[in-house]
Image 1 (cartoon, one colour):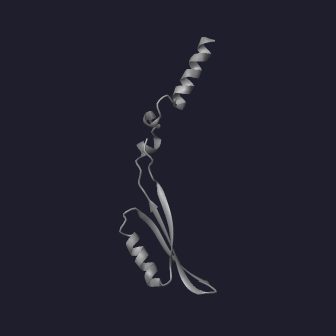
Image 2 (tube, rainbow, N blue to C red; image 1 turned 135 degrees about the vertical axis):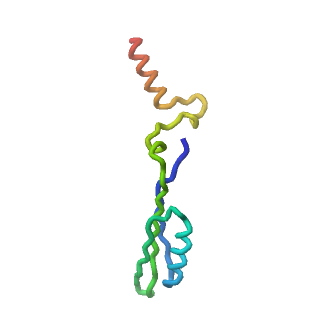
Image 3 (cartoon, rainbow, N blue to C red; image 1 turned 90 degrees about the horizontal axis):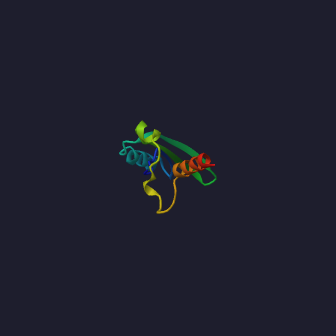
Length: 94
């Protein structure tokens, strides 16, 4: 089963408010942008801005609830389902 990204959080730094707004405008081009926040901060060197971006990727319910497929197993390696099946067969033999 392929890996599916569900969400992503990013944090960026900018020296000026204009730079921060440019980062947000660029991020808005992505349809999966769920939230953005510009926070003004101060330290001994002066003012700066932190930009928090949150992306949420809509994943179908079927993908989330489906069992992983055994397609990616190396040759000769058993999946957990195969191992449990073999164990139950051994118990029946005993």
